[in-house]
Each structure stands twice: as C-alpha cells, then as structure tokens.
Amino acid sequence: MHSLQRAFTHLHIGGHYRIEKKIESTAATILYIHNYKTSTRLCLKLWHKCEEQNELYDTNEPQKCIEYLLTGWKVNPLSAPGVYLGIVPVRFNRNKRLTLGKLIHQPNRKTLNPKQGYKYAIVMKRLQESWILDDQLSEDKFGNKEGMVWLGQKIADMHFRIGTQNTEKLPPEIGNFHTLQRKLRLNIHEFEKALVQYPDKENGYTSIGEKMQDALLFYAPSFQQRYQAGCIKRCHGDLKTTNLWIRPMSIHQAKGALPNTAFELLALDCVDFLPEFYYIDILSDIAMLIADIYAHLLHHSHTVLQAQQLTDIFLTNYLHAMREEEQEIKPLLTYYITEKAMICAYMWVNFDKRPLQINGKPSLGTCYFEVAQIHMHKLEQMMKHQEAYISYSATIPDATTLGEQASIGRHSG
Image (tube, rainbow, N blue to C red; front, side):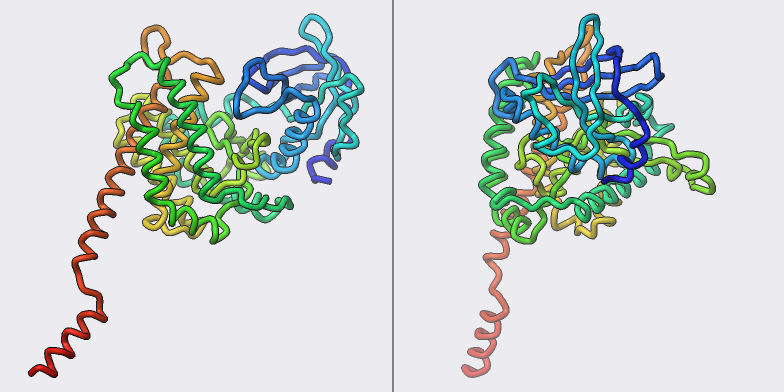
C-alpha cells in the first residue's frame, strides 16, 4: 500500500457531493467536487464512451475504462506523491450532484465491477489551480534561468523515481523503429486534419509531415540503437505545463531552503491508454514539455531567441542530471520536439475543439504549429550537415589506406 493510502485510511470520502467544475475531453472527464457537510474537496477523473471514432481512445466498453484507470493508478502516485488517493465508485444524480461509494485503496480487476451499475473514478486531492505551471511561466516566477534549472532537475528526479519504482515490464517490441513509424503515421494523419482548420493556408506547415518521414528514415539507425540500449522506459507520456503543478512545501519542509527549492513538482495525469504512448524514450517524454514551454513563451510575447535560450537551460540541466550527452542525442531530440509540437497542435484542434483565434488574435494553439515548423527547420539543417560530413569523409582515405600508400612509397624509393 502506498504511504499516501495509509495516511488517508482514516478519511471517509463517501457521500453526496456537488459538482463545482467540469472539464470534458474526447474520452475523459475531470470533475471538481465538494461535500458541503464534511467540507471535503476532491478531484475525480473518469473515462467515458467516445462519441466520435478515433485511433487514440478505446473507451466504448466499461471494462476498457477500468483497465485505463488501473494503469494510471500504478504510475500516477509515483509522479505526484501525496495526491492520488485510490479509486471510487460513482453514481450520478440530478442537479450537478453525485454520490461516492467507499474508497478502494488497493484496486484491481476483481474489486472494480462495472456490472454493479457504478462508474469508477480515480480520486485526487484538490490542488490550488494557481500552482499549475501553465500560470507560472512569467519571468518573476519560473520563466527564468533559475526556474528552468530547477525544473530540469525535478523532471530528472521524477524520471528516476518512476524508473526505479515502477514494477511493470516493458512489452516486447514496444518502442522499436516500427513503433515509431506507426506513431508518426498516426500523428501526420491527425496533424493534417488539424491543418484544414488553420486560418492561414500559405503557412508552409503542410510539408512538415513528409519531412518528418524523411527524418525518421535518416536517423533510423540511431533510433534503433537507443531502443537496443534500453532507453525505452515507462514515462509520464504527457508532460505538458497543464499537467505539472508546483506546490509550495510546508513551513517545516521549506525551512532553510534556497529560492525555488522550497517547492515540489507534481506531474499529474500520466498517459494510461496506449502502452506505445507511455513506454517511450525519455527524450520523447521531455520533448513534449520543451515544445509546450516553447509555445507558451512565444504566446506570451517572448522572441524565438528567448524561448530557445530558456528551453536550452532546462534541457542542459535535465540531460546533465540524466547523464546524457547533449550533442549525441540532439538530432533525435529535435525530431521528438517537432513530433510533440504536432501532437499538441492537433490535440488542440481535433480533440479539445479549441479555437485557433480568439477575438481575432492567434491562440496558443497556433504557436504549436509554429514550434513544429521551427524545429523541423533545425532538423533539416542537421541532416544536411551530417550528409555533407559523410560525403566529405568519403573523400578522405582512412588510416589503413594511408599506411599502405606510405609503405608503397618507401619500397618504391
């Protein structure tokens, strides 16, 4: 049992609640609920049936929704210690009200039975919304050098914690080159659907998909080498600024702490629906966060150079903590950042149904398209540079050839 669960065994969360806020996506619902009698405030996540056919979520069967909840329960407490409480049966009533059953501290397929007429939800402590990283990227908070150094180190700590404490075994073949090909095909398909909604048709974004296919083939040996070296891990899978919360430590915890260290990072809502989306290279995991931070900085009037400098600081500190060589992995990371920016763009348009313009001004969604294009251009330059290097190297005799030529010269002399 998680220490968190033991701490809450005394807490009775069952009873009647009022829904204060509801956030709904294609296949999941987040509910902010309040029991006025006990003053208990909680947050619930439920999976629900998809109204539209899609290639990401398979939630039409109740048993599949339970499987997703159980998958999330195994990992979420590792990335957000002290937040996740368990799984609870939910019955919806009228007038924005619902009833919670008894909290299940050690959920499994036997304890969760959809035939009883309940829906099931994973239960979280209610956090202050002002703690979301999305709202803390201003220069006076974490959108500065010190903030990026801190964030890089904390994400590395989280990856280490999940890597050492997760007991799941890596499914065979997940994360190999063929997996990357399948995922890229899906992502290109959804990205091109989203492009139909983009207001500026002369944006140059239409070529990104084809160029990404070329890049994947170009770096195929490097991707396969990472797979064979065991770099595919159980990761968060959706490291976005809206899933990262920066919680101030208690007065006791923070005593004597340096600036920016008197906080703890909580990464909520790990991917729990498709193994190939959470058994990934750690480079792919942080690429999502880099793409998202980059887009937020651009949206908040930072220049491309400023966004690049801040994300570089984050990356350098993360890679140092993970003992990764930055120059060796740079092309692969740039590929992943481009792909993750594509994902953020199409999720904004196709699944979250959010506008690309608000009151005549570009929304954050447009910045994801821009980030994809910026990093695709970088990737093209890297490929051209490497091709030029290979061509140049081919014209230079190797040491063996030079030795043979020298020997021939001595004998002929």
